Image (cartoon, rainbow, N blue to C red; front, side, top):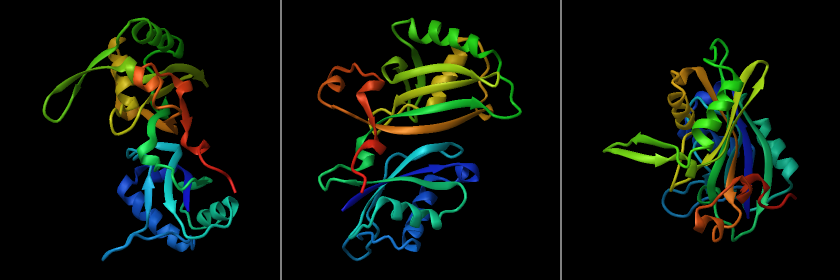
Length: 249
């Protein structure tokens, strides 16, 4: 039986890297007495798969972990059992039963949406209204939004408009809050800070990565990989949250 677990990561746990989070969940699942399946062979390990690694320093409300279990009681009992052994900074918020034929969350990841805002003690260089005008003028109105990305061996020119589905800003408590939905996955993986840094550059502003907090809101799969994906014409409506896949019991 396959189960998809949704959790949030916040507070000081944002400084814990992905590999340590994997080891943490392996121990937490044992402590919660989850009847998880183990692989066969000389060195058996828990059968689990995370959707997409979260960068160090980022917080999130939408992280996903797929596991296989021998038995299952209910979503409520599973969530409660796991939360009893969670440390502060990690909270289980959802649990769904998946069809036996379903693919892992990792293989389904196609997009993610983020919220970016200025940390306490940092002052935005311009207002939310100015940022909104900049997004419209430099990102949405032109046919392309080209940047040069430095890779390990060379430089690569990318058109971010092909990889960004939502890019907007609103004012909250007199501060700008950016919303971004970007392509995510093994083929194309666009970091949200790269988009914001490019906007700052187009607007003639200095971008300080330490000033901006990045919060991942959710991770998505494509609803139909054979239609819109084949044409390369995608929008936010073409995606479904990984947390909406599967059944509640």
